[in-house]
Length: 357
View 1 (cartoon, helix red, strand yellow):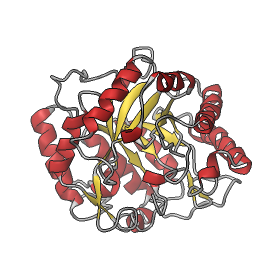
View 2: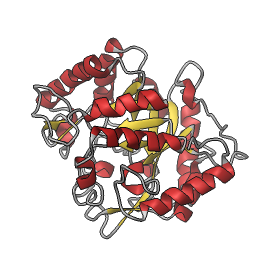
View 3: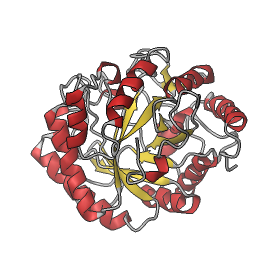
C-alpha cells in the first residue's frame, strides 16, 4: 500500500485445476461450473501484528495482549465456521521475530511462543497452516526479494522454522509474503525469489505446499507467456487478490479477471487457482486509515462473482474483520460480530453442515 501495506508491498515496484496429484484438499471442491453459484470461505490470512499500524488499530493492541490460550481459542473459533486453511502472514516483522532466533530479537508479546500456540491448536481442530517466510528485511522495500542480506536471513528462517515446528501435523505449507505486482506478467526476479524459497522448503519438507498471493489481478494478461511463467514458477497455489477492499476492482468486474486466469491455469493444472478475497473496507483514505469489516451484502457479491472460476476462496482476513459473539479472544472492530453473524447465517442456509460450532 502507499504507504506500503500488505495490499501494496510491491505497489510501487515492477516485481512483480488442482488435480489429485496436487493439493487434493482444494481440488475444485465445489466444482467451478457456472451452476455452482457460491463457495464457502475456506480459510484466512492470519497475523500476530498487522504491519500497517494505521490499518490495524482495532486489533493490534488486543492481539499483542493475547495469552497463548487466547491464540489457541482464536484458531478454534475460525475452524468452527468451516475454515480449513490459515496463512500466517509474517514470522518476523520490523526486524523482530515471532520465535526465538539469532536473526532478530524476539518481539515481546504476552504469549512467549505464539507460533507454537497456534500450530498446537490447529493440530487439534484440523486446520492447515501455511507458514510465512518473511519479513527478514525492510518489508516496505521492493528490494527485499533481491537484497542478499535479507535473502540470507530468509533462508535461515525457513530452515529454523522447519526444525522448530515441522513436527506439527498442521504445518501444511509455506507462504512467500513478498507479494508480486502482476504487471501483465510476473517479473523474472519474483519468479527467482519464489523458486529459491520453494526449492529450499521442498528439500527440507518435501510434502509441504507453497502458496503465493499476487496483486494486479485486474491487469494480468493470461496469455501464452503467462502460462509459460506458471510452468516455470515453483508454486502449488496462487491465490489472486480480488482487490475489492482496496477499491481497485468491483464485484461486477472480477468475474472477467478470474475467468481469464481460469483458462490459463487449466493449461497448467498442477498450479491451483485460489482467491484472496478482501472482506475489509477503509475507515477513511485507502492505505492510510483503519480497516473495517465490509458489509455482508458486498462480501456475498464478491463470493458469487468469483466462485465459478476458483478452486478455493481464502479471505483477507478473519482477524479484525470477524469475531464470534462473546469471543474470549475478541480482536477487531465491534462491527466484526455483525459480519460473523451475517456470514454464518448465510453459510448455514447455503452450505449446511460446514459449520462445526
